[in-house]
Image (tube, rainbow, N blue to C red; front, side, top):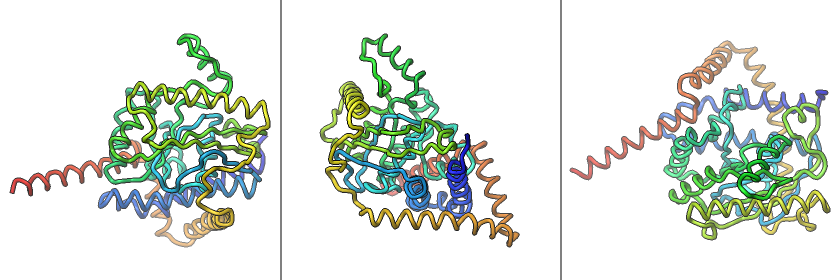
Length: 378
C-alpha cells in the first residue's frame, strides 16, 4: 500500500528535478554551443546540488543509516566504480556514500536509455551527461567510446558507476545467471549475478588510454534489514533502515592491462563479493566490526549534516518559489512552456541533450584541428 512517506519522497524528488531542470539548468543550455567544457563543469555542480536531496531525505526524514567500510576513497580521484546490483535503487543509495567520501559532481552513471524520457529526472540526467545504454553491446559500444573520449578530451575528472551484472538481483535474474554458469562450467552464485565483463573492460581501456583513470573502486552493497527492491517498495514506505558499503580501492597501476586478464580480474572480484556477502548475511550483518573505512571521509559528519539541512531547506522552498513565479509572472509561464517543449522535442529529434553536447564538442574539435593544420602549413 502506498504510504505518505513514499509519496512525499517521490513528489519532493520529482518537483526538485522538474523545476531544477527548467529554471536552474535551462539558463545554462546555450553555453553548450559556446564552450562544452565549461557547460559540463557548471552543470555538474548544479546537478550535484540536487543529488544531495535524496541523501537528506533518506537519512534525516526516513532514518536510514549508512555504514562505509574498507578502503574508502581518495577525494577527487578519477575512477571506475563497479558495484553489485542488489536493488533497482542502488545507484541512488550510493550518493549517501559519495557525499561523505567524494564529490557528487564527479559521478556519472551508466543507465538504461528509457530513463532519459522521464520528465524532470531524465532531463537532468541528460544535462548531467549520464551514459544511457540499450543493453546491446553492438549498439552501445560506439556511444560509450564517443562519450568517454569526450570526457578525456575536456579533462573531465569523473567517477563512472557501472553495474557489470547488467540488472538487479531477483529470483528470475539469479536463475538466468545460474543457467549461464551451468552452461559455462562456472560456480553458481546466491548473492550476486555473474558479471558481464565486455563493457567493463572497454570502459577501463578507454579511460586508461585517455589518461583519465586513477583507480577502480570495487563496492559491495548490502542491506542488513529490509531490502527495497524496486521503486514500488519506496512508494510503499519501505525505505532501507541500513545501507552498508564495503569499498576496495585498486590503483590503476595494479590492474591488468590485457583484455583477457582484465575480464578474469573482474570475475575474481565477483567471486570475492559472493563470499563477502555470504559472510555478511549469514554472520553478523556487517562487513567489518570496526564499521569504519581505512581512509577517513573527506567531509566531517558536521559538514555532511549541514549540507543535508541546507538541501532539505532549499529543495523545499525552491519548488514553492517556482510555483509562485509561474502564478505571478506571464514571462515565467512562457519560459516554462518553452523549456518543456524544448526538452521533449530535442529528445525526439536529436536523441537527448548529451548527444547535442557531444556533437558540439566534436564540431569545436574539428574546427580546432582545422585551425592547427592551417597554422602549421603556414
